[in-house]
Image (tube, rainbow, N blue to C red; front, side, top):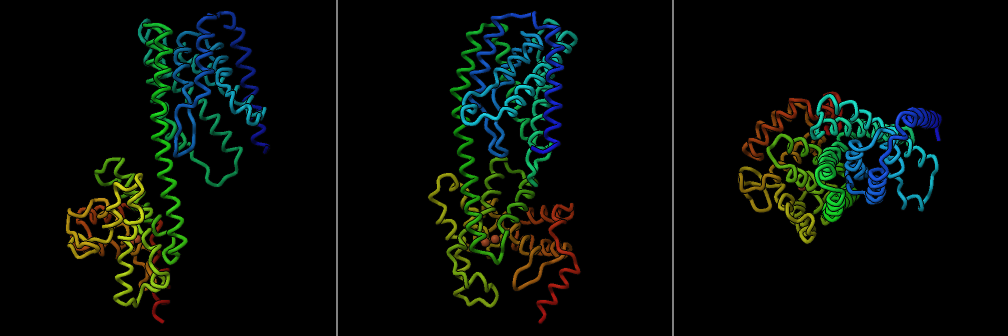
Length: 429
Ligand SMILES: [Fe+2]
Ligand SMILES: [Fe+2]
């Protein structure tokens, strides 16, 4: 354990002890045993079944906050802190390997976040919503809980591992904020059932949530498998076609920017970007020798390279998870004017995903160059897209690419003019 981490843990534990003593003095004897034990049992039950799993960041969030929302309303800050600290003990993971300082850290963090959130609720409720349903005060308290709890954890993650790829605070919170919104609304539903109906309805809603959780979970599992398949294929492409190493991944990045500019649904954009990552997968069937000598190819060899679109399509069409957007792979060398391959489709007959991919694919060739031609400058690339709009490229997409280039989206990718001159000289021998 490093020194900073030690200091941080000491700081958290001292804060916990001080807050605990102050709250104990103020409100420990003001206690409603029935509400307390009901919420504690619910929380223990809930904590041992994580409800939401975020596939992007591998952060698990449970249903603690929705249950705590009811606790903010019915218990005082001391007891809210106590049930949050005890109720969130995960019985299963303790068996697997007990790390005492992690255990104590988690108890302290839950106590502090929940009791401070409860104080926030108690301060705001009488001012803004006396005798009415506490929509806003619960929102305020949930925000306080969410920020404190995740901030403490974020700091400990960053101090504990020296990984270069640390997640920024903003992206960490952005990922988690989706869970906050869900938690807030579930919290309101549970609190309303608790106040206006009975504990029975409260329990029934929780049972219902557990039934539908499996539905959410299997959907996320499916998305995870999808990403894994794509990543594995990406490795296969890179190991085969090392002449254009990283090409597919770069194209996927350009596709991401372009999809943001087009009016595509999020689901559609995600599919197009994923397929872009593996668009040249068919090249694994093309002879190594042909791939390495992409200049001076015989007609037969050129025909073979062109078949990579069909090979890719054939390879993936039986995988249910990805086969609904596969025509993007099949048609990514079609041209707007109908002079492309494999079928010579024209204009809007070419799927929009394939038209996007064509432009991004060519952009990468222009930026990085190939064995038979050096890279182009930013200005030359803009000119090329202007020239080929309506020819090779969908005019609207070409225009969008030009705008993205002018806005500086790819500035870090362009080679400097001196570098290009150097490369041109190397071509002149
Ligand atoms: Fe291709
Ligand atoms: Fe490509």
